[in-house]
Image 1 (cartoon, rainbow, N blue to C red):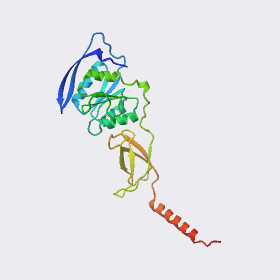
Image 2: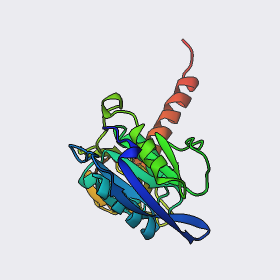
Image 3: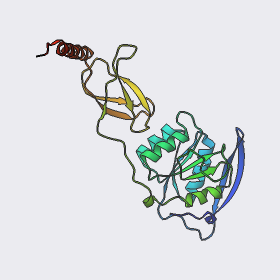
Image 4: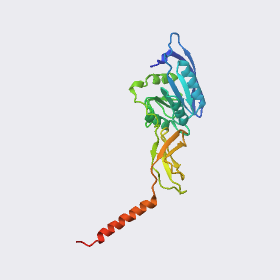
Length: 251
């Protein structure tokens, strides 16, 4: 659904926070304007609560169904609950930045239409290295944001989503760490970050843990543990066999 910016009149004032103009919009629908027949789902991600509130009020008034999140990890939790049609994300945020979030969404949920926003970049072009379909410069006209949203690619032209794997992940057992315990390096299927997980003394191959970053539950299966003594014995036996073959008298 394309939303024409002329359907609304916007009175905009700005509040300067940390050197960045924060838009505080007031929206009034013009006579004869039409609300969307189906409310598109929009997720706004920004660590500044004033920006989340102002944009949420504006876009809810227009007809979007808006949710908000304060950083990338919170956004992934919202996406797990319900996949939005459009993701509008700030780039500079704590814990998980918009750069990383947009990259994860592009790989995991390519059907989501994405817009990056920042006050650190200017212009209308998507900054280099940012995995987004559009870019909104903070402090610029809110009418330009609506124009960007209206120019997003249609959902049917985007790839299908790749949901997180529900089956257990097969993780190889790594060498012993400093503590002497074996561990596995796990790549979270939700946030795509990796972390080390101690395997303890249990010989069970099926395990469950929570990602230390996004807290999502991960089921994984251990590869068979390596018996170092058995491996060394096999190597020694192999060396002895080779020596014996060289020492055999020729016939």
